[in-house]
Amino acid sequence: MLRIAIITFLVSYCAGFFSQTIYSRDFEARKKNVPISIINNNSNYFFLLRYNKVAHDITLERRAKPSAEIISFTPLKLDSVNADWFNYEKLDNLFFEHNYHVYFLFEKVLNTKQTLYLKIIDTLGKSSGFIELATIEKEKGVTSVNFEYKRTLNNSILIVATQTYGNFAAKKIALLFDLETRKITWEKKLPIENDNTGYSIAYECNKNNDLFCVFVKAHIASYKRKYMNHAQMMVPVLFFDSLSIVSFLNNNSSSVKKKLVATNLSSLNSILLFPVNNDLVINAHITKEDASGEVNIYFLNQKLSADLSKEFYSVAAPLDDSIKIALTFYDGTDYNSAGEKEYRHFINFQENNFNYRLSERVEDYYSKELLVWKNDLETGMVSGQKIIPRKIYSFQGRTRFKNITKAMPYVYDNKLHVIVLEATQNLKKDPNQFNFHRFKKEASLAKSNLVLYTLNTNGILEKKLIYHNANFDAVPMNYQSDKQEELILYLDGGKREKFAILKLSQL
Image 1 (tube, rainbow, N blue to C red):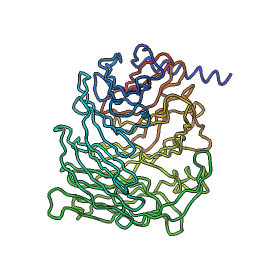
Image 2: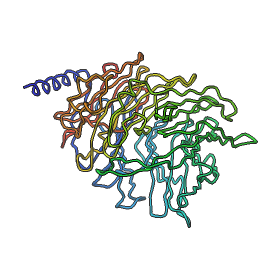
Image 3: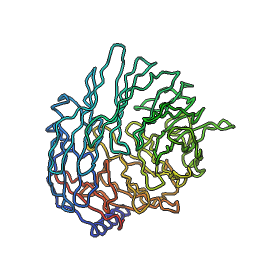
Image 4: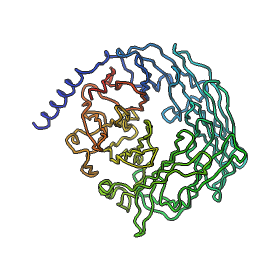
């Protein structure tokens, strides 16, 4: 009876909630036409990216607000470049909108060659041809090749191509592609990298198109037991000897500068670079051993001039004690401390002189809690440290939607908001008192909740039910939104689908 009462309450809540929103009519849905990502940057329409398994292609839909009717439909025709056996669920890509045009950058992967292509879709849904940006081949002695790419402040695309020789050396070339002129702005050959020089990561460009990166020197210090792929395995433990910032300036007689940032780190969860005016801010999520031998988490912030000659601040803020206690538990390894848990960068948002950073803990098909903190880019001070609860277990064959573990974060009214899928048993749990083992995990969309977590300006984490999955299931997915007043949700009903438009001011 209690369970029936709870379900009745949830359904009634959602019915009342959706009376305050706009939702589309039902559309016919096909199981082999799976939504991947939403871009919501305009007041009159939004974009939906899909993987069409029948046509074996990626397709783009531009849909009107608030009806969600299709305005234009664009098949990207990627099979004319990739082989027919290529798995598009594992396709590395960059998908974004700029100046009312949609850009889709993707990799063609062969055994001995990788190529980056760009497609540009205009306001009428017409797609350009395949614009080849870069190609990298396995030369003699090369064991692997790969690309890294990202957008920059000037809305260019920064690409770094790597050729790896065995396990001891890497040759890299960086290039910058201008979206407006559709030309290469510059190409730079980076110095040969090896264990002695360190290896470059975290590439970024400022408004002057100067290139910055972090050089990491590390070695295997030991091995530890870890539960992976349903088995216990011994994995290497890296010790990070040093992190150094390197700048490659365009207009300087001494164009390459280097500065030591940190030494003797137990782990490096993530490090990002943020150009601020003519300066450079470094955000790092690290762990370091203290005098007692305990490994602790720190959030390191440094601000340097572009030529690295001046340091404006250096702040290393420890993890809050309350979070440290909440993250102290055994979970698949022989270590229970918070500092032994591994996190990776998920997303960041920059608002004025602040940025929100989110790191997530993900193991195989198990997506766990997120860490969030706020950085003051002017002073380096850290605030707003919180755990965003999440326990979702999703594996191959459980659902056709491979992105149900995705968190959907956005910033509205100067606050960070994060939407996640969650088991209904967690509805009444205090979001500020996270207990991993008492927090129930979710393994499917059916009868689950879509929950909104909001980090208020006073540092308190608030929680609100957005939608209870019943006849239609709300499906989390990659979500991009730029200063819009509403949230777009995709709702799956098996053979039917629809979209909900929720007013952010009413959440």
